[in-house]
Image 1 (cartoon, rainbow, N blue to C red):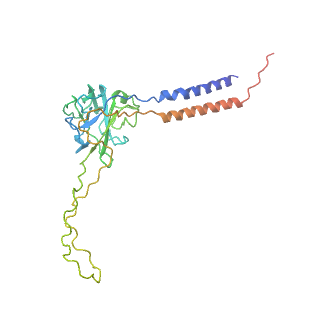
Image 2: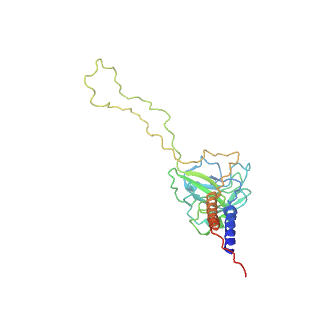
Image 3: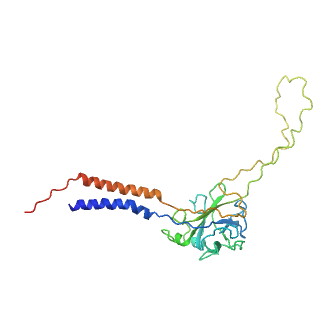
Length: 294
């Protein structure tokens, strides 16, 4: 009878593992307060998050409301630049060089081995840090994304290496992070403000007294003399916010949290299926007859 007892114990263990184990194994990363922004080197307000050059973009621990909102938790953080989806890492230097510190709720320059260029202090008392170097985005609208995550969580990622230039902590790890998007490139030019001001230069002075016997063989020789010189340029694609200026309230948190719910459900289903198969086998297998002792 021992094998049947072991079998039922296995069924009980699988059921317990399905109910408890996956929940523990896929606990999501905790979120944190505050928000990140991009700005110019002096921390001033940005113009619709659009910059002329990649070197103009600095990481700012705003928002730039001079203390009228929740700040980031003090500590050390890593940052990275990606395409808008977060799938393609664009930061080209080692992650150890992309380290900043937060003091009194705002980014206050680099920390640790961080070596990026620092800007000047703005009204919130912080010191923004330049995002360069990073590669050009594959996004056709010139859009980028920047993420910030605590150093402790990033360094807990499997295979973390401070010298790595390929670790994408948003894609490869389950870490809490803050995010902001920006664009690099000229703003779209304005469409023409008025239609052409001059009609065709040589309209007929008098209408013909009789209709022509044959239709004209050539189209009019004088099209409009001043058509619009520059048609409206194409509006860039992407989802960057409108002009941020100097916001008066803190935007909602932009945490990136991985819950792992799909994998949990799949694991539970597999464990329940195995437990069911073992239980059916035990039920259908007749118990051996007990031997009588003499």
